[in-house]
Image (cartoon, rainbow, N blue to C red; front, top):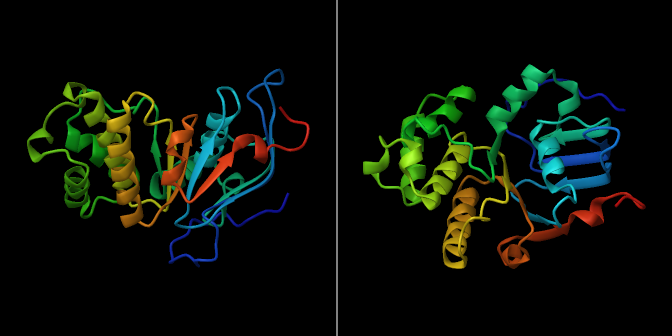
Length: 238
């Protein structure tokens, strides 16, 4: 496997550098679990990709690889030209905190922290404290969360409000890459469409690449490219 120097990008990136690049990747949770095997997958900077497939098809496993939460047994995962395999776990976590925003299906908010502090926690881990409060408030306002909610504990918010808070937390670091795992699964159709419009509008303002994972194919029109995860799998892999 080709080695890439373990240096985090600090200078402005060449626009020709893909945001995400996977080559000859193989991953399985255990020896008995299904094998995820992808010959090649690439997402360009600023691209919005909808990744769909049935339950158990490997969508979440792929997202974990892209986030650096899991490591492939074989192959290479590159984000912004940086090989994740060339980084120690600590440096990989730091790289993710600085360059990748993640929206989880279950939101993963800290329930007893305030709305504002939940957002600022991401900026703290990314070591981007300067201007973080102003950026957090700007995102909360853009996502329709009023200033009077800033001090309210996250557990007191409605599901829709928690969802918007999770988006603000993911975007406060101004990530180059945004990963979303089934974030609309708990919403009705009207709330879902309003949420998608807000999410992609804010993502476009931040000029980040988006990989959005869902089984709901009615969301496809929001994206510049749709990918069936089965089309990524190496021949013969279920």
